[in-house]
Length: 393
Image (tube, rainbow, N blue to C red; front, side, top):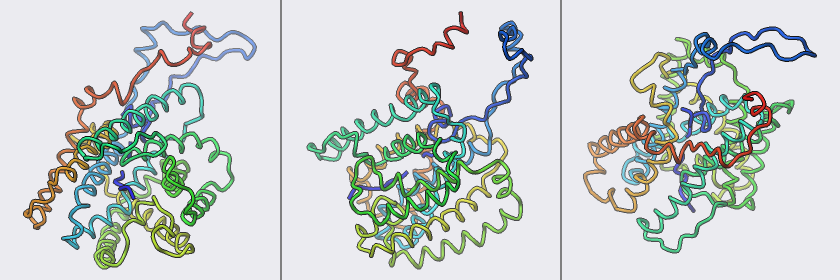
């Protein structure tokens, strides 16, 4: 069984394709024109540039993306510590209950404008599909060499490690127009997730178990509006989030030796987790409710003002995919075999290192180096839109 190792993204320009695109400033009012006549004359380029407000990013969502990706890295760092530390196991389960759901909800929220138009499809291909192919190949080569598994096969149908999120986001985005016309999108998505959780024959192709079981979070994000985020950011919500999170940690500490954490990965059916089929439906609905409660608490604590980490929210996909080499390499190279790592001081050190590494990988210099892979232009691969060509003429 392969690792979940979640992980979003959660995710600048990249964040639009991974989750999270920049907020668009409103366009200046257009000059009125007759319905049957030619378009009104355009402004001179210099005038149009001077009068058009520059697009600005929403600091709140950039902060949320950065914090979510830090939790992803911490969760991966805690995974090898679970056998020797009940506290690490409790933190791991608590974080895994909401960090990817939060990333996916935000991804859905920023996918509301997806209309399957040519421009959107191009960005979906260059920002999601191409990185998926590149990193699926890169991870496979890494596993063959560093992981001492020279026979591990190349397969674009069987995502390995972190690439599951990219293929899932690709499928979710393509399905967006469907959820816009369905009368009860969230109940339908939950029904699909329940059916997936009791269907052991789905198989590993495209990691469909995860695609379907995480689907309700994406659909919920599509249905959210700005006022919903304003609601959870109220002072009352921030205060209420404290006892809720404390209760979740206490429950996780009790459940750590009793519960299979693989339920949070959503990569297997109930039968594959040695549970009766009906348990899949119950766990799917129960975990959705618990995850959304913790997501609301997490979003309540996200600061809305611009901070020094706000700019890193544009690079979450970079950090997400690149840190996978270190996360897996730490296992391949037996970094966790050092005894002091499993002491309280070592666990704190591992946590700090994970947060520092993921922060570094989200920085603008790293984005510039890897932009050719993460955000390739690829104009040569697409036909030019006839209307655009005509407008330029």
